[in-house]
Image (tube, rainbow, N blue to C red; front, side, top):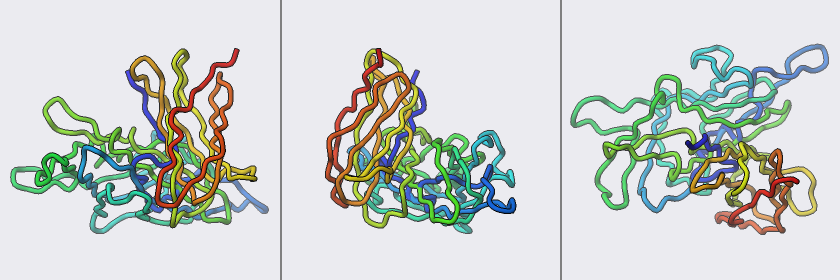
Amino acid sequence: MSRRVQKVFGLAGLLVLALLVVVQLPGCGGSSGGGAAASGTLQVGLTDRPSDEFQQVVVSIREVRVVPAGMENAADNDPGLPVVATFAAPHTVDILTLRFQQDVLGTITLPAGSYSQVRLILDPNPAGQGSDPVNYLVLKSAPTVKIPLTTPSGQQSGLKVLGKFEVEPGIINAILLDFDPNTAIVPRSNGGYNLKPTGIRIVQSAGALSDFGSLSGTVVATFKDWSSATVSVVPQGGVNPVAAGTVFSNLSSGRWEGPFSAFVPGGSYRVHVQSRGFAPYSSQLKTVTAGSDTPLGEVPLVPLP
């Protein structure tokens, strides 16, 4: 059984939904001074990772909501869920065109605090013969055929993208939705394909990114299970991370692994990984160039004695 995989920092195509790092959305916001709720601005963006199999992956988004921590089971129409964007005409995007680019979905001012989920509510594919799907993929091996994507709950309750983030008061907070078509798209036994939120990750950055590169790798443990790991990226000579996120493990071929991508401006960085029951990991200094990926390879987790 595989667990949900929440890729950290943008792997496959961070749907830069102007939710820029859906960090700290409203909800359980903090307070200041005379008890007035503090607020911050959240920008959400979407980006993606390339695919060897797919030529296009197209989704049509009707609405983007964020979920305050503790409200994970709330209905989509719950007034406590901030709406980042609602589109009169569905926002259609081919995520495979977004590598190292951001498609800003919206910006919103909302209560500062902790958030745990982003919901992407999609437009439904039309029923009946002869109608073109609005959520679909095109294989490189069949470039003229649009294959509908089945999106369980994608229209009613939305694709629920999991991941913690914070919205700090008085600043612009940014999150990226990293869309990895290689894990978000799952073949069905009937020849169709499902679109699942387990292949979309929330990446929080220190600020909005207009020009960025990435650091990517796979957190791996062979002899001991791990459920989640925190990945953070710290610039050379710095203390505070410029990007951070959570990776969830997936059991595959006898080992527990979780891929991640961290989107950052060009520069030199170290990647730090922490998981309960394992020794902390720090990479050597790595140089990131805007518009390209710097691979770290496998990041081994070593169990503590």
